[in-house]
Image 1 (tube, rainbow, N blue to C red):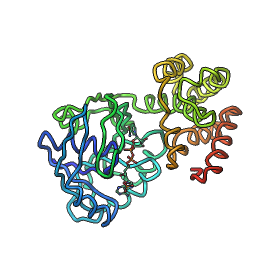
Image 2 (image 1 turned 135 degrees about the vertical axis):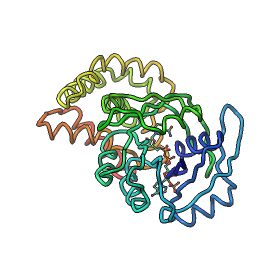
Image 3 (image 1 turned 180 degrees about the horizontal axis):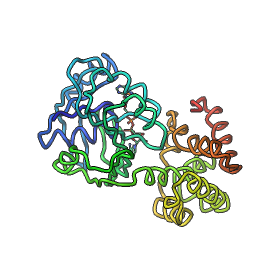
Image 4 (image 1 turned 90 degrees about the vertical axis):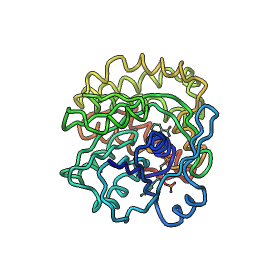
Length: 303
Ligand code: NAP
């Protein structure tokens, strides 16, 4: 069965190249004709892994091509996901599998609303990759990907291909819990690293702020039916600060490089969920206002 990978960015390239190199049929879906021309000039996708550079000649097309799509990896940012799925909607087979790689929460439901018969798989990944040049990606951090379907606990057929392609993964019966936990860790760390302009380790100097946020995030998780994801949140946040002390968070990198953040699907999503539950979380709400003001000052989108 063919794979379509929409988005030849960091994770899209990482997935497409690993699937293609074990002989699985893969086609990329690129944004527009200009990107298609640039891709043809680049001669394919290049993956740099442990210093080894390998180029893969993979076929590419636009969203309005005519072949049906049976298995789609949606590898764009959360804020592009709904618009991207609408572009390929007429091509999706009624029983297609759609793998959603987006970080945070909110974009998965926005996509799934348009897909009454197809199966949406939610992914949460700790793998790390970045774009070194156009269509050239560095596999920077080994990790793991969890997949799950909040509507259906039976494992999907595509897992066999992930196995064949050596993509470390696990079928997760509680993918929402996992996504909520990751979102809470992100909310406790990333915005503060932006506001204090520091590496993760710098948050040791703001221990009270971190502790206060963890307390509110735990309340939110419990209120949203995610009690397991709330357990020992503060302890894990402190462990992450230590383990990644020398790193800049992804949100810090986005802001310093002038890129749009995924704020609406992370801290913004948490604050909206709290309001929907009539939960008053003043620290989280103030953090969102401060972060938005910071983005506005830098001319970056507030959503
Ligand atoms: P990225 O490098 O920015 O790649 C996104 C790609 O999607 C871009 O190439 C973009 O095209 C393409 N795209 C957007 N809309 C499109 C459309 N309508 N049609 C075709 N292509 C479209 O992003 P990423 O780092 O791979 O991140 C993807 C998701 O994974 C995010 O939610 C991120 O938080 C999450 N994630 C990333 C990592 C990581 O290490 N990178 C790790 C864990 C989770 P253009 O190139 O034309 O703009």
